[in-house]
Length: 380
Image 1: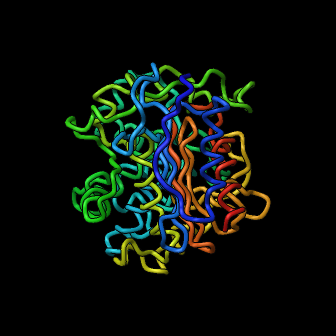
Image 2 (image 1 turned 120 degrees about the vertical axis):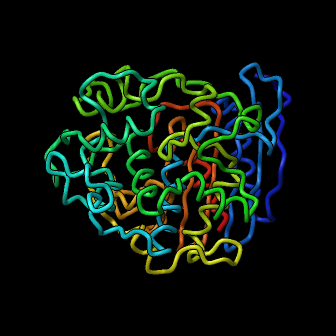
C-alpha cells in the first residue's frame, strides 16, 4: 500500500477521535478504500473518504465512488417496505399468501410478511441444483421460492436468507403496489428527492463509478463445521448469483444483496429510523409503522449465521446481551458481506454509514466498524 494516504472530508469539532480511528484503519492496513459518514442530532458530524478505489492503489477514493454493500441493502429495503406499509398498501401482519397465492405451497400459507422478512420462512437456500445465472431471472426465482418446501419446521427459529430475502421482499412489494419495485420506490421516494447516492439496480451509465473490492482471505469464524442449511445458503455453486461484480449483477434489482452507494447516502437513509421517521423534514414513516418495523420478530441462535441475533423486519436489532451496533439498546441496522455497515440509534439520534472495499470475512461483527462506532460514542 502507498504511504501517501489520500484522506478527505471533515469532522465537526469534538469528533476528531473518529477521524483518527478511521485513518488508523489504513495505517494498520485493515482498510484499502472506504468512506464513513455520521449524523448526530440531525447534524452531519463526520463525512470522510479515504484510501484507494482500485486494487492497484492508483486511483484515490472519492465521494463520487459507489461501493457494493451487499446485505446492507436489506436495511435500506426495510425502509422501502415500511413506506409501502405507511401508504396502506401492505401490512406486516398480513399473510404473504393473500398477496401471492402460490406461496402457500408446503404449509407456508399462514406465514406473515413480518415472519418471512425476519428470516423465518425456511427458504434460505435451494436443495436442488440450478444454474447460478438463474438468479437473474426474477420470475423463475420467485416461482421456485413460492413452490419450495421449507428447509426446517416453520415456527422453529430463524435462518438468515442471504440472497433469497430480496426476492421475497421484492415480490411482496410488487404485488402490494401493483408493479412498483423496491429499487424504483427507493429512487423515486427516498433518494432522488434527497440527493442520496444509493441504488438497488444500478443503471449502466453509473457502472464506471463503482470502486473495486478485494475478497476476504479467510472463511468467517463459526463456519468451520457447517450444517446443511448453512451450506445451502452460502457454499453451493448456486447459492448466489453468478458473475457477481459484473454488469448483470449491478443492473439487476436484488434488494437483499446488490445495493451500491456511498457512506453518506447510507447514513442519510438511516436518519429515517434515527430521527422519528423523518428525512429532511419530510415524514417517511409514522411512529406506529416505525415501531412495527423495528419490533423483535424472532431472537436466538440463528441457523445460518453463527450468532445469537434479534431480528426486526429486515433489520438486526440491539438488545441486552445482543449488542451488535454500539451501546444503544434500541439501535437497528445491518452489516454487509465484507464489512460495510449502517445503523440508526434513535435514542442518541445517530445514524451511521461505513463502506469498505477491503472485504473482511466476518459476516456481522466487523472489527473496523466496531472501532469506529466505539470512537463515535466516546465523542457523544
